[in-house]
Image (tube, rainbow, N blue to C red; front, side, top):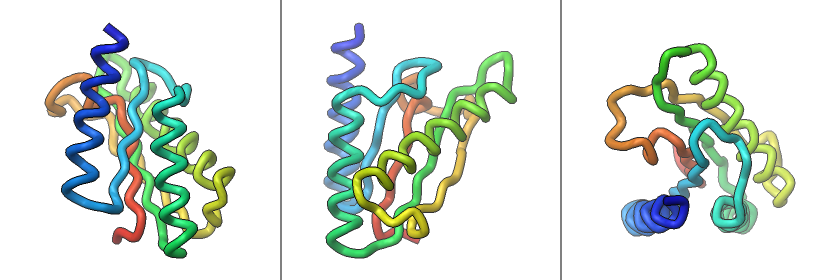
Length: 124
């Protein structure tokens, strides 16, 4: 199941990269804020682009809606913070990183979409 989620995530990531060259998507396992190896690789790529272009970076965290909406919102916030912190560790000036939680969402198409953080390099 984890392998299937990873493959779906990589497929979605490839689709996002083709549509917007400055957009990166990091996926998390359910109810988790842990960065796995594929997530680290995505963040590293985004950081390299941000550093080389001196661009601003927007980080948006998502979480699915469940029975405890406040916990879901905190999960979205924590995911965005974890990714922003890793971007800073990877060399992006923290003053160029903005964070925005987007959860909880109950209209997302699938559970995987609700367990993501989107990184936009050079965006709004």
